[in-house]
Length: 187
Image 1 (cartoon, rainbow, N blue to C red):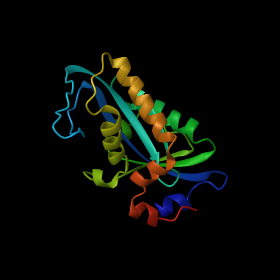
Image 2: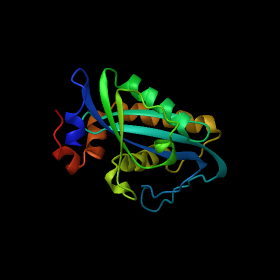
Image 3: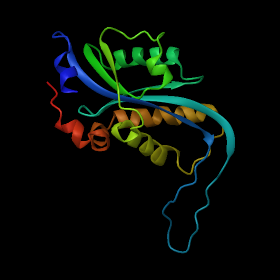
Image 4: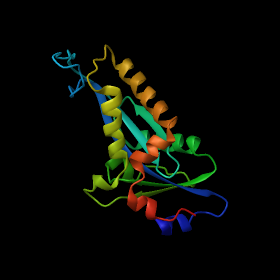
């Protein structure tokens, strides 16, 4: 990580991000919740098979996020749109994005902007990606024990989650700034 940061073009300030994608939909997840003693909470449940793919990039040092909701398949075109979104969210920066080896990330058709560098994380190592606990947070705080009447409501809830996270950089840092990331030097 330190080598990649040191190789950033001198006219652009480096920004280290981690990326991952997840699926959210209308199949509800029943989770434990608090209730007064002697009261059993009632929670709706549904099995509607509609979903959206969400892509999230997190800058752990800054506590900032960049996100995109994809209605179709997550492929190299969706990844290119996401990289364009990252450029808008982090203007004038040299973005070093760590990601897994998913097909959309390593596609030969993927056009990577000049101010973005993609670096693959080791295979089968989701524990290294700080976006994974972010997905847990979004599922727990925005989707648990909720039933959505339409896929548009799922999208709206995802937007609420991403806006909420972007408005709370300290929370994002507390979830994503792993010790090994903190130990790396950001120049």
